[in-house]
Length: 63
Image (cartoon, rainbow, N blue to C red; front, side):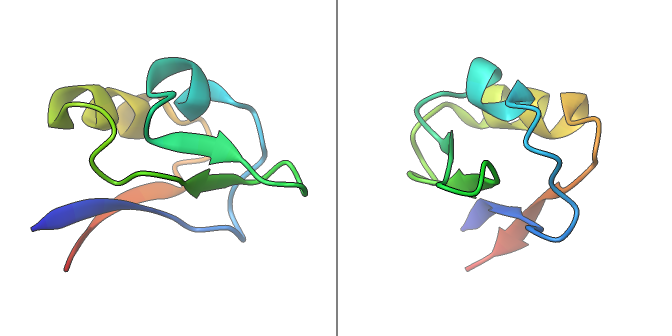
């Protein structure tokens, strides 16, 4: 199964992923994106968040 993963070192905290896939991503206390529920949104919505991320810090990984 593939799940989204955020490279915290690359994240700029722009909230783009949260706006697109709010059930999957959230910002932590440091305003860095984290995955709160890897299956919170449909895969195509998560892919849109990945594609629209200006920092290109969200990736798929296999679990």
